[in-house]
Structure formats: structure tokens, C-alpha cells
Length: 384
Image 1: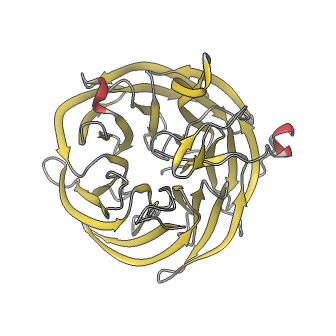
Image 2: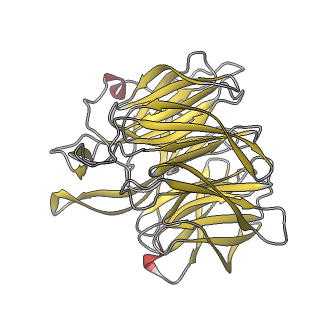
């Protein structure tokens, strides 16, 4: 579960959203939740929280800079892949897994909203419905199809994309509401999608033919609570992060070989406590993995740490080799790369900010910070 701390609403929310990108611009989108604070390791709802926000960041600038914010529902619950961007950076989809209970604002209940943001018009243009508990989202490289994992329904919602229109197009039902579909990853050719299921510890393989998405009924078995997942831009592997039980155990990520007759898990690599975020560099030569590292535990827990770990591995086939790591703020969530592979963003719930990190192929250094309104819990860039 993702956790957040409350901050005051930025004045930027009252201003028009203005975006001006240069030739080298690259958009990153951070979704931010106000509905949770951490109290001695316990996710707690603050009184009268402001509305959730979405922050737009120019990751191509040096240093990266915030270029706009607007209001849209989101949630700390689920992997930090509840945001997706079309390849042409014209639309963003944001899923809201939970909302405040109308009958008791001290509780949350499953949400079912998927917000469509037109980045060129600088506005929310639609609010669509999914099954309960939408979490991870993936958009294919053609920009024509989106899949949304619904953790409270045991199903994946299908949406077609045409220009500015996003249209419901059915769903894939796994037949078990407790299977907990959490995140989705398209392979680069768009013909396969992998769905993590943290409720029954499986990974489903979906077949994609145009707008038709079907369950092959074949599953992979990785670690305990498979969660975040992404396929390499090279199309040869995917990597899945497992959450484990958040009890202090070191948790592995698993490598899925996509080159054989069918996907299969071929390798496990230790990272740290409670893997949350994961992202490949645009060239597929590196993968960044974010482990909360015990920073969401109570301070008297024997394996508590006051920082998150961002770890970069080089990728050669199915081999992952650790290259560098850096410490960032507590309760880390998503991670994202700049296109040139020299800059990363890493979310910190405790700081209500994204750390800016530089990477030179050998070392990883924190060089700055971008403050946002709300607890940053979802982060993506466009996949090409």
C-alpha cells in the first residue's frame, strides 16, 4: 500500500495550466493523494483533506521543472503506475483506487473513476467508470488501447483511444474478485499484456489482437504479492516487483523472458524491503527499482529505515547487474527516467516531493527536489 503525508494546497492550483515545451521537452506526470498520512507506520486519513492533484513536469529541462498542476482524483492504494501517458504525450489517464466514504469521512471505500486529461487543451475532458478499485494502467505503443487493472473486482478494464476520445470496450474477468489485479504491462509489439495479481500471487498473460483482449488462462508464479511490472523497450524481458509482507524481509524482483514460446520467469534478483516503483530507461539498457526499505514501518520496528532506496541495474538479456544506488525520502513510490537516461525522478510521500537524481552510468546522485501538492504516489512517462 502506498502512503502519503498531507501538505497545504499550492497556489498554483488556482491558476490556469500553462505548458510550453521546447524541442527537447519530455513530460512526466505525477498523481498526488491528500487522503492519507502516516502515523507511526499506520495509514491514517487526515481531517478535511483537499482534493487530489496531478502535477506535470518537464523532465527534458535541466533541471526538471513543474509546468502545471490541476485537480483529479487519485489514490495511494495500488502500485505507482496508476498514471499513463499516450506515446504522443497528448493524453494522460489517472486511476482513483479509493475515495472518502460519503457516510464516514474517516474511512475510504473503493473508487471506480478514470480521469482523462487532455494535455494540449490543459483540462480534464472526461471521467470514465471502471470496475471497483482501478490501479495500474498501461497504454500500448500505438496509443490506441489502454488496460486498467481493477484490484477490487478481479478484472481488467479495456478502453480504446482515438484522438481525444477514450471509450470503454469491455473487460477481462479473472473469475475471482480477490485475485487483486494490480498493474498491467504491454509488450512493445502490443500483442501481449502481463497483469500482476497481488491477491493470489500470480501473473496473468493476456493475448491482444487489435482491440480484442482475451485471457490465455496461463499464469506465471513469481514472489509474494507481485505488484509493479514493466516490459523492456527491447521487448526481450519484463520485470516484476514483489511487495512481500512489509515485515523487514529482503524482497526480490523477477525477470520474465519474453523471447521463448511463451513468457516465463527465469531469474530473481534481491533489491531491498518492499519493492514499489520500477522503470526501464528508454534504451532498455538500465532499470531503476525503488524499494521503500522499511521507511513506511513504525520507527520502533527492528527493520525501520529513514530512507527509500533507488537502485539502478544494468540490463543485458536476462542478467541484471547492480550499478548504483541512492537514498531518497521516506515512503518512496514511483520512479521515472529522462529520455537521455541521465536524470531520474523518485517520489517521496514524506517530503511531498520528487527527488531529482543524476546518473552517469556509474553513480547515482540526488541533485534536487520538486515539491508537489499532496503526497506523490503515481508517476509515469510515455512509453515509445
